[in-house]
Structures are given as C-alpha cells and as structure tokens.
Amino acid sequence: MYFPLLENYLLGEEEFIKKLVDGNQAAFGRLLDAYQQKVFGTCISFIPNKEDAEDVAQEVFLEVFKSISKFKADAKLSTWIYKITTNKCLEFIRKKKTKKRFAFMQTILRGDLPIAMTPYFVEINHPGIILENKEKTALIFKAINALPENQKVIFTLAKIDGKSYQEIVEITGKSLSSVESVLFRAKKSLRKKLKNFYKNNQ
Image (cartoon, rainbow, N blue to C red; front, side, top):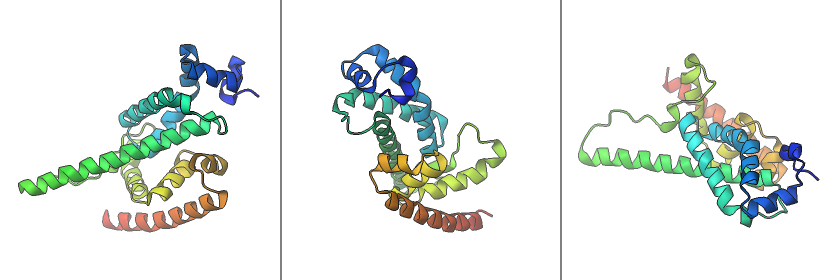
C-alpha cells in the first residue's frame, strides 16, 4: 500500500517511515512538501494569526522530526502528525492565556489602569479574511476560544479545518458517537456565547 500523499514518489509507507527514522533528508523534504500547507491550515484554524500559526507549524515539524522514532505503525502517519499539530496549537493557546493573565495581574499590582483587556483572539490576522469581516470573525474566534477544550478541539477540526468525522475520531481517539455529541454541545454553547457577545458589542 502506498502512502496517499506521497504516492507520486512511488515510495511505500513502511519504507518511507523507515527513511524518516534513519534521518534521511530527502524523506524529510518529501514530508514537508506533503504536509506543510495542511499543517499550517490546521494551525491557522486554531490560531487566527498568520505569523503565530507559521511559528507553531514549525514547532510541529520539529516535534515530528524529533519524535519520528516513537511513531507506532498501528496508526496512520497523517493522524499522528495532526495529533501533534492539535496539541501544539492548544499548548500555544494555553501559554498565550497565561501570559495575558500574568500581564494583567502585573498591571493591577502596579496600580496602573489597563489600557486594554482585549483577548488575543480578537487580534485577527488570518489570511483570506477581508477587512470588513474581521470584527465579526473576531467575535466568532473569541467565542470558540471560550469553549471547553474538548468542544473547542472538535468544533475547530470539524467546522473550521474541515476534517471529516472519521478523521476527528482518529485524531482525538474518541468514538464517533462521542465526537457527534461533543460537536452538538459545542454548537449549542457557541450559539449562546455568540448571542451574548453580539449583544455586548452592539
């Protein structure tokens, strides 16, 4: 069986993975060619800022290169890469929230009045989003970011990144029924949050 994204190279998946584990530079180049846009697409779905999404995508490939020897062939290589991508995005978001909270606390302790408490995910810099839609998009991303983490992951993978239910099952390790249930709750919660956000921002 040939690895779908690399079938033009006529290289079997097992042989390709072995080359990656052996540190073959040509194989890593092929991996980048096959996945760099797809990984970036997932990153920009979680992190609507082009520069930050590119930085996280680089971290994903560094992790792939560093950890390829731990890859287990009972999963698809693509699934393993997307798991790393999702985890790196969530890690970035958590760090960003922590930095925001720390900066805000420092401001309070100094007795200064914060100039702005604008959350990171209102600072939209997403390629393809036209200027007049940025305010609306900012509210949507802000609402998504306020979801519980499992809902945020599944909603983002399904509705922003365009992954199929089966792909989400493989990436998250959840059952199909669980994915459907979490997505339903995420949509319900998101509708409520957006209603409140729009009300408060009118």
